[in-house]
Length: 393
Image (cartoon, rainbow, N blue to C red; front, side, top):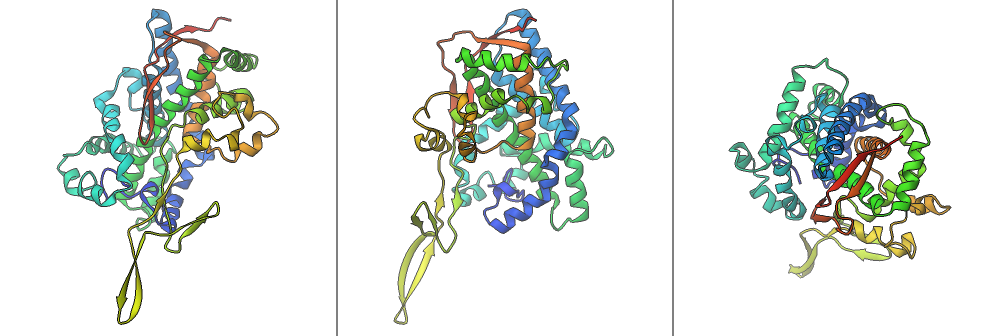
């Protein structure tokens, strides 16, 4: 489905394989790690701001709600990487203009709208309602379009993702229209926050509740004797146990616990030895001949949590938090079932996880309290406040 309405098509809103590939190619250069890594100094600035805010909680003794601060960081990082400008959430320490709260209103809708496209076209996806500013998606679009307009007025700021997309639009407007460009910017901003926040939360949540793993991970980072105030991506990528803890956190708590459906082609498809046909077949008699009619579409998906907790894939301890599974001789076999993070998210998650783990000690205010979460299209953890102290030595 497309947001804010059906005019703003993106690779994520496209079910036709050829069209999806075409749209993805238009954006690929901006998402390449070789390009994203150029923004690392500006991602460092965001992590420094986060560290400053975490330090203030350590000094005051006030509990910190990591879900909020990881969301703020994710939005500001995507602003730097796409627009060369932070949105300002970290500095303000709050949800500016209700942008995050507004995007949360859409999560339950997004969960089902992709399966009911006609309903989407008549409601939230209706261009008339968007133009009249009657839908919550308009606020999200306004937030990104303000940043987009500001970036267009400053074209020489630096080579960010938007500069590549604008160049592609100017050269090949028939391949990347202005509406598609706006939709892709909106998609990138909207997809960034909750998944990054959930990933970092699961990393720290499970480590805090497994002190033996926390000690190993913290020692691994501390023993590196890094002097930079923010751990570089290159250094963070060299910590095998930290990487294992991130992967195990993703496995235990997938940020998107919702089956991403695929449309069965007209010829049908065989998966795991089972044949699935396309749509519902009806037969009618026409001039003494039988004619087959196919109505609707067949959509297939598997819930990621079902895969992540499969004993067939992960062994008898599939329900147990065990980062060591990613380090053993069979790690490569299970690695192929693991969906790696996109480059922007992976870059900031690795860096933030290593930096905060090295510089701070986190404990739950109530160690017996399990976190809460709302799960629809995305999983949104909350309700596990922590005490934080600066790491000594």
